[in-house]
Image 1 (tube, rainbow, N blue to C red):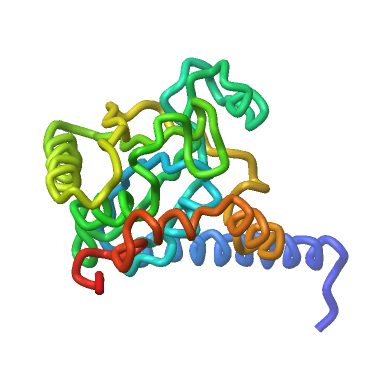
Image 2: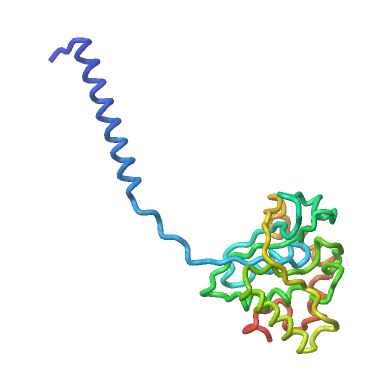
Length: 223
């Protein structure tokens, strides 16, 4: 059958319209598809333990911790830079936001573990890093968390395991500002420099001196 140019144009337009309708219909069906199941329920906690490279690396070892982010909190400047924070004029701490699954690890366990990854007796900073941005602190969301941290401090001091009082601060949560990209997962992206820094700073040697077999151990796994 021979078609006129007008007929061919009309058929083409019709096919295009039909094709468009098919695409929009498919998109509509796709939009009605239920979203994938969400990840298990998680909560977050913020810990300042000196160099956030090390704090991040330590918490990543904990079963039940699903994410860690290095950042700054507790200061007076919005979205501060690393240079500003380490300059000591912003009031921020180097800190890590820890996202975890409470069904696998509790807040109490994280707090217990945290103290065994730091020197709670150092009122000038942590290990080789001194200054206000390197002080240790736990940033609590509510009074329940505050009670847990303060109870842990009392237990540590009552045990007499440390050579001095615990000076780690318990502070209300404040805005957490994510640090620059190159700080995230630094122990993975720059492993040689990280290991050199950590060893040179004497972090692990000091932890062993303070805590012995309990250094960097969760309560149930402490030997």
